Length: 70
Image (cartoon, rainbow, N blue to C red; front, side, top):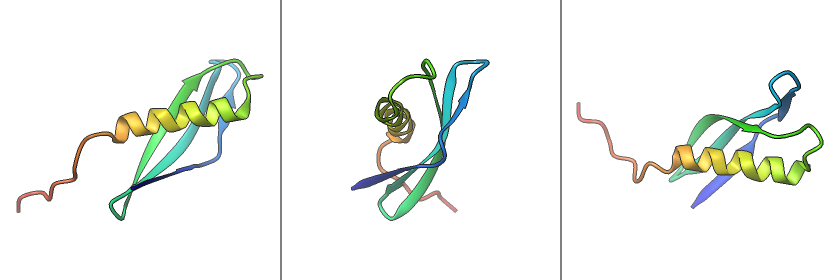
């Protein structure tokens, strides 16, 4: 099961990009991803949050976690 938590969402008016740190909790571990989405400043907040979440999940979708060999 995965849980997703968005950090503070910031908007860069110069580039037209929303940015946030997104934490994805999976298998008892938390993975943190820097996420960005290009959109006008007036874009609805729920759309921005969904887009940032999708961006994080795409980065996180690497398959099962395997231990590193020693």
